[in-house]
Amino acid sequence: MFGRRRRVAPVIQAPAPEATDEQVLELLTSALGELVGAHGAWTLVPRRDDDTDVFFHDLKSQEIAATLTGLLSRQKADLRGERTAEPHALPWTPSPITTWADVEPTGKAPVELRTAADARLVA
Image (tube, rainbow, N blue to C red; front, side, top):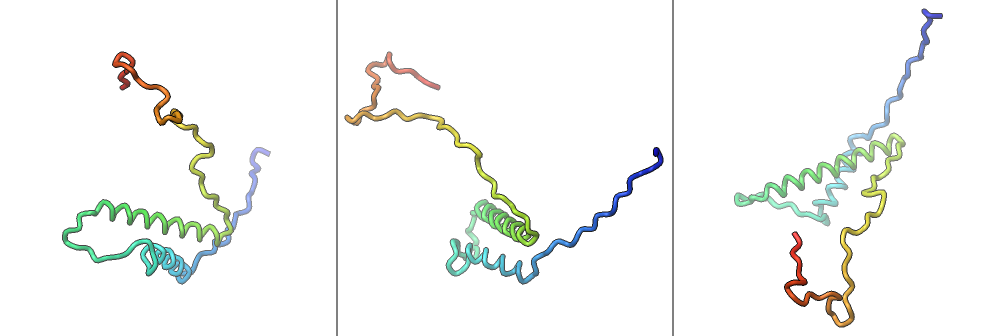
């Protein structure tokens, strides 16, 4: 009994379905077409020598890369039959940080400071 070990059969995994190069090209072409295509949200213009807005270009290129990466991962999950749920920002509704005072019908605030002694400095 002590020398006996369980033998487990090896798990053979079937290869996961992958998108073909043509499918990836079509997917990326349509996504980029929505961004910079003929009717896209952005236009492409050649860079000029006086263009100094490199920070914006770096942020936009990272956003495009993240969008395309998410698109490819969702396509891969769809091919494998996996259900991927979109994350929610907050699972609850936060309460407001501030509460606004109601304005009286006269247009004046309900509480008015009359003298300097009534006023307080709040830091």
